[in-house]
Structure formats: C-alpha cells, structure tokens
Length: 337
Image (cartoon, rainbow, N blue to C red; front, side):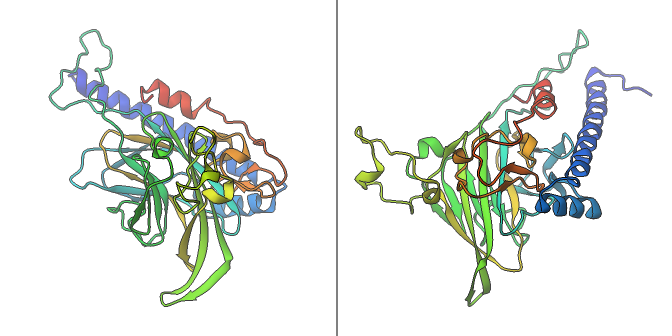
C-alpha cells in the first residue's frame, strides 16, 4: 500500500524521481557514445567502440566507490552520506586516454541532508524543508586502482589531488600553490584537471618502469601554479604592484610518476557529509571554453574522458559549447545549487 506518513511518501516519490532521472541520463550518454562512433577523430572512434563493447560510460563507477557515497543523475553526481570513515573516494568508470591531453571537470553542488529529528513540514503537501548546509570539504584529482577507497586522493603513491583548502597533495606530500586564495574552492565552484600520461617518458626505477603524467589544475578558469614553478621572491613573477602574475601553461603543470602498467582515473574524495559533486567527463558538459584557461598547449588536441574532442590542435575555442540543459537543470531543480 502507499505510505501513510508525509515523510515516507516523500521518500517514495524521491526514489521514483531519481530512477526517472537515471533513465534519462543513461539514454543521453548511450546516444553520445553512438554519435562518437561516426567521429572523424580516430581516438574518439576507438574510445566509443571500447565503451560500447565493455558496456561502460564516462561517469562515476558504482563498483569503485566508497560505501558511504550515493550516486544520482545517472552516476554523474556523487554525494557523501553519513559514514564512520573520514575519507570516501570514488573513481571514474573509465581511465584517461594515454599519450593525449585529457581534460575533465568536477562541480561542487550545494547539497544538504535533513536532520533525522527534523519536522517533515509537509502539512500542505509540499516537500520537507532541506537545511543543515555545511561547508564542503573534498579533494579532486587522479589515482590508480592501487589507491584504497578510504584514502584521500594524493596521499597514495601515483595519485594527486587538489583540496578545498587550496593545497595540492601529491604522492603523500602537501604543497601550497603560490597564491592559495585562487586555488581554494567550495560550493558552486568548478575544478578542472588537464593531464597527459606520456608513455615515451618511461624510465627505470627500483619500483619498476615509471612514466610521467603532467597534471594541471584550475579553479573556475584560474590556473593553479605549484610552488615548483618559480620562487615567490622571483621579481619576474610579479607585476608592478607586487601581485603574482599568471604563469605560462607549462609552469602550471605538476609532474606525477605512474607505473607504466597502471591506468590513471579521475578521482574524487569526499570528507564532509551532505556534499555533492557532479562530474563533467564529456566535451558537451565541460564549462571551460578556451584552451589557454586550462593550461593546454596551443598545438595539442584536447580530449574529454569519453574521448570526445574538446579543442582541436590549432584552435583555442571549444568545439562543444557547454550544454547545461539537462545536467544543471536537474541539479538546480533538486535544490543542489
């Protein structure tokens, strides 16, 4: 029978709405894969064939997620529910392309949980009031399958992450960018990550053959410069008023060394509960519209995680203007913004 209490009816209706949203998102993503099979770009076609044959999509992986992470919107949105572990991580379902510039983004949505003892507030048949908003605490980055899901991304070897405090954690080592004011982020912010995993950079170590990945972060289109780029006392890095000037894209790249046999996956670690993050793994969902804003070199083709082309070799403007009709509309209607 239909639930008798207002709160239980709301929960049932919410589950039905979530199922309908998942169906719409999965259908859209499948159509995108089919469309990529006819692309003129060989990497896009090969990735589309791989996705279709393996029955995978460029979304968060439900099989590679911490136990306290809930997935919605066709596994495009990850939310941390209450758990007894501080770090809950989740990886993408597919790894990044090798020997190519790959770019992805994650947007922090303002989510909240209704307190268990809160009044449902459904006297007039409306949904219960959602409250208890918290400051977001999370980290966005890259990791291999070796990293446990109860680990902060960047704390494990061959992983790197940009924390909401603005600090970068790479291979277990914390470092502060030149100006943390621009690297810190929170609710409503979009974090971008450009990575190139170069197999030609292979070299021998005591731990086996390693390859270099060049990683560049940006927050809302502002490149994040690691302290390795140049000294804070370097006068050439400052303008006439003593402010740090934006570095060239090459200076913003952070080196990450990965075992040659391992793959790199976009990774998210959620610390604060009631925090939701939406992944942007397709060129049509990417917010960035200029190549120089993400730190990509001019002569490089930039791909999204699903293999679609974001920027052509000699073009600075995005080929696919961001389409927020579905993803952003759904999240806004659910009160996540």
